[in-house]
Length: 245
Image 1 (cartoon, rainbow, N blue to C red):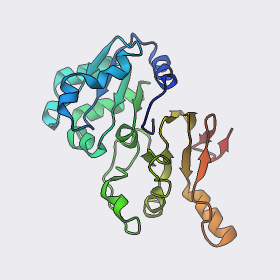
Image 2: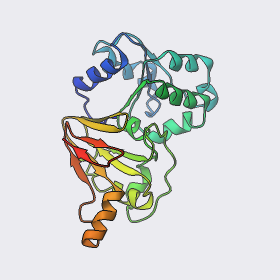
Image 3: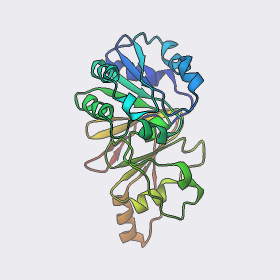
């Protein structure tokens, strides 16, 4: 789950290793971008072809009925990896939310498939469509639409330090306290595997834990440290709620 920006080769290498190699079938879903020409010309695939990936397919539509085309279903069933590109995460839910294809995404993940995404493709993996108009006034509660919940009960933000978003998840977690917040900076990713995630890349991920907030309120009467910085190599365990280097 990548925070956007330039993606170092190491992230693609890691993705390829999890998929079983650069010759394994990968489905790219570029629907978060509104640049149709870019998609039709295949510009979205260059980041993979330039790094040696040889078995790429594209699924893209703006129509839920077209999303459920049997050809798309078959592509996901044969895939070893799925990649969601950047743009506007709401375009992804508009095209695929509630479809049979979305059910195939979940089945793919359940059988051990690898899903990678950047920017909007990162936020879509969490539980809420964080971002958009909510950033205009962080003092008001915003009714976020659900995201794809590949990672459940986690609200994901991206471009966090590069775009001065390190405080944007505070009201989200205040209003949706059943979620943990994870904000990922550019050129950085979290690798979610079983009961933990690990940070890799050039910068930081920020952890917003409502359980930790409750403890701070007991100790100090208020939340003084709303997030914890996690550097490359740091791991967070979902069960223990502990960060380990």
